[in-house]
Amino acid sequence: MNLVQATILGLVQGITEFLPISSSGHLVLFPKLFGWGYQGLIFDVVLHLGTLFAVVVYFRKKIWNLLNSLRRKCWPDVCMDTEVIQNRGIFLAILLSIIPVGIIGLWLDDYIEINTRSVQVIAFSLIFWGVMLGIANYIEKHIKIKKELKKINWKNALFIGFAQAIALIPGTSRSGITMTAGIFSKFSKKDAAEFSFLMSIPVIALAGFLKLSELYMVDSGGLDFGVYIAGFLSSMLSGFFAIWILLKVIERWSFMPFVVYRIALGVIILMYL
Image (cartoon, rainbow, N blue to C red; front, side, top):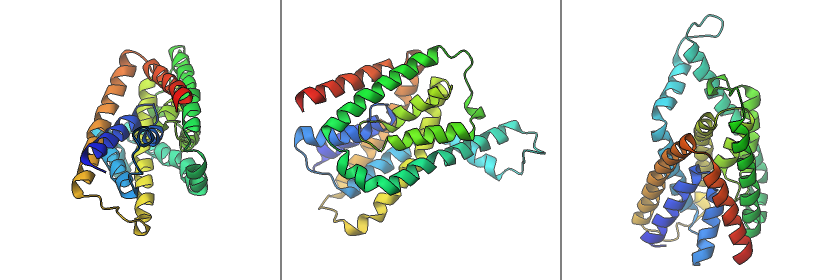
């Protein structure tokens, strides 16, 4: 792998990790399209660290408020600071949301890896979950009273968490399906997207940790230091930009540009690959 390939894969990872168009699907497709070999486990970890750094930096103030609420001596029965209680509720919801993907990922990771990485699975996942995102986009416009993120409950958290577990299948899109589930839970597009990004932090970190735990069995493949830096920087910068552009797009318009892209890409894959 050279610097150009590393940079391209980093850009693909960063952009597609946070836009609702499937990072795993694109990372499977790009090497197939250009005849590149598997980039290696170490490089996968580097790309995940880049996107993790991007979302942490983007939401640094929100993350600080969530963590700061935990150290405050403020309990529900006596606390008058509602913001602290609400931030604790969001923090708990994030923790609850990772339970389904953690259990299913550990249980079925090998099966999913072996049986769901075909271009056909990616294509059908892109199309089906693209349609579901379009339905969610339509529903959101007709929800008269939208729930605020600060009022999220354990049922919402687990429902969105189970949706996140489905994203283990390439082509689904972790961000896309969690935002869809968030809207089905009657959150606004903005709040659904924000929770999707926040709940991605422990999941990306967990995925990176699991990959790191496997590195002792894997040879680095002769990758040079410059390749790692290129992949990390490109995934971090593109990930930060992807978060910014998504929030701008859904604020001004809707999810429909991503819905159209997903369906068109899925159809092209079925026709030509």
